[in-house]
Length: 96
Picture (cartoon, helix red, strand yellow):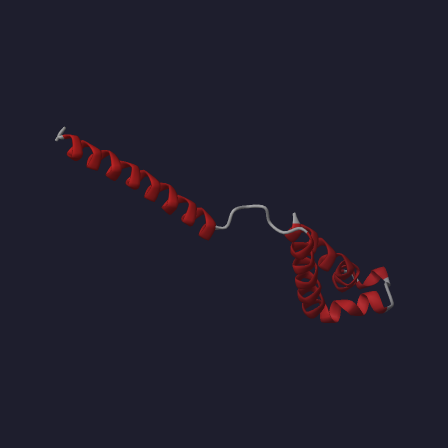
């Protein structure tokens, strides 16, 4: 949703210039039409600013892959430790 919002905000002001370049008979005049001349710069910088701002205000809630990997490693280490303890207990009492 954040990327879609940044896209819409950066694209919206460029639409009158696009319409005027496709159909000059519309007769649109003013600065909003001339924004089309620098649409790449405007669109890129506004989209980056909006996207970064939204990510700072509303950070992602997913678990990062590093934290997920750490959780898997710790759970497997705990399983391995319990297996080692059960085997050592079996050796201690002579069940093996």
